[in-house]
Length: 411
Image (cartoon, rainbow, N blue to C red):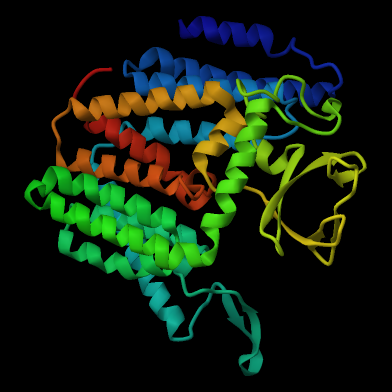
């Protein structure tokens, strides 16, 4: 069967053309898409489990969205999805899942050590000093080498889960840096992962663990997250984004957007939230999210009034300072916005098969920890975007492959 796919590629690749695009550009695009589709087809044919087959379908569907979007944006997203698929296939061949968990723990330990070094005034990455101790660069929050508080928090959540298989009591080491991250998604993910582990490993203590985790999560939301204002700004933005996806709201003139990608079936296409024609901005004075549109004459609102930039700061037509939402801070909404109902359906099928395999498999330590890690990532995705951050996204395919490897049923 794969021979036929290769033959088709040989026949099709040099003969395809794209009206309006330079022949070299068009042939490069088709070469890339055909190779991605060929690898996906190979994996689909040669793997019996449904999760791998569905992953291959998702990769192929992503390629289709890239083409339907005119190949003007989303190349990096498609490339990352394809690399994630290759990483998944490679991880399926690994033999020692516990080594993966230990590596995650060591990342967290090394980061905590570096956080301590930063606290005593030494930083060779983010805080550079010149002659006479002159500050050349100083933009650290003492969060180690993970750069963002949210990234650090999510890594610490994963580390706390992986430490459970080594020494459950030492998992508490990650509690303080997790708190310092001020990341509700990280806390939610940690609670989900630790809760799953407690249910299967510490069944007698589960209800006490559950009550403790619930109290911690509620306290965190009330005393940490709510004062930061996240609870008041993100949900209204999510509502606007969902509304736009369902009703296919697009630019002032639909001509500026792909005619194929402005509907809830396919969404707006790859990387459309950040680089698409619809722009979401938050007014800093009111914390209200507003919608604008990219046109050949600049970014405008529906009235045709133009947003402008001065000294790197974005202003509304009325002179209000605005922050651009370049991510929805919710992976589920991002999935719907960029991939539509089809993408959501494929991912839901993958998750259904993951949970089905887990439910019907012998609950080994490696399987429980890997499933706890997946639940943690899903928890992160409620208020963060772990699959859009290189420091975290590469772990997704690895975790998925480890689950497939450690489940002992077909399907």
